Image (cartoon, rainbow, N blue to C red; front, side, top):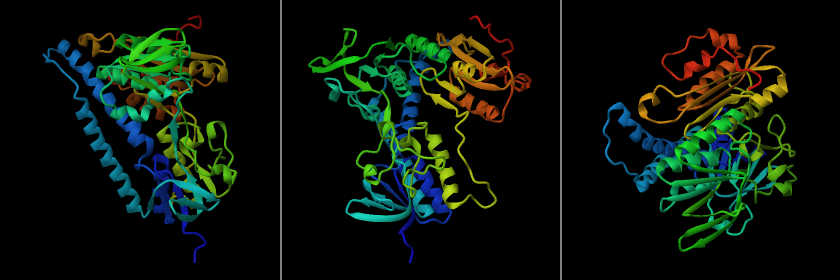
Length: 457
């Protein structure tokens, strides 16, 4: 009789947890997955997917205005917020069902409810306990709120998709990618958006040219961006939410979104009882094989606070399954490489980036060459839009390798994904120069920039 009920018990049904459970079951392991909410986690339910759908919705407002320059006569357009929410919910429910079908089809036992770790091999859900040789914690992250007077009147990003009514006046607090995306989305959907950030510039950690350029573009699009200030208090009044800023200004808005970061979702799981080592904000500490300080317990994805990106959690899950149960027949065991991970920010315009910022490249390599191009895209020569595009390459002088590639412009994520493959393969600037561009596209600019900008810029 087996010593444990399962070979692997996964706590958390987000992207990383679902992938690990399904892949392990396909290897022949006995797998269970415990999840208290809807399958798919943050990404599917209140993150990447609905956010991108709402971003598409917001772009239509721009498209209606720009159509006139191409000869189209478009009548008055208005947003049916209720219909958008309904259609989004229908699609998310469909995806939840697909996730369930994939898990059940692979042989994974689903355990609905909140899971608590009782010991190194036992998890309790409700009044039932389950044993497993290996336990994987993949519970993701959760938004945080500040300790200020009136913080209870604010919402976090999870609530933004079903607000009722639509917020005509929205204050977004924060300068990270979630704050910037929601500011752009709701500005595009027709809200009067103010964005407040205590830092000197948006998107800390991104290339400085990208940060400055995006701030310029979102202001042009209508977002009232206020830097180097913060919210002191929020008070509900008959006219709306009265927000007092640290600089003494006051705003009256319909809704306040706090998007100041996410913390690992570890509360009430019993990690402290087991003595599992944790870092800042409770992040679970793991080794290169995602093993915690308790050998039978593993963790991956946002709960470890490494890189909070869905594809990273997916990659970690596949590497862990290979480590625990062996790779597929004829395949080498996978490992996770955290270098040159591309990412996109769905602001208006989009950001796409892979590799090092200019500052990080100079620190790591010393002499580097910078290729930078800023222009109005062909589309906007007729659209009437003032939106501009930024493209930038960072090249290590010693090896000629392209070590950083950054873009702010339409479909930046789609464009950068392909270039990420080239950079992962070690492409040099000479390779970029020898590649024929597709004309006329914005993407061709990355293979036609010939002259580095002066060092003294």
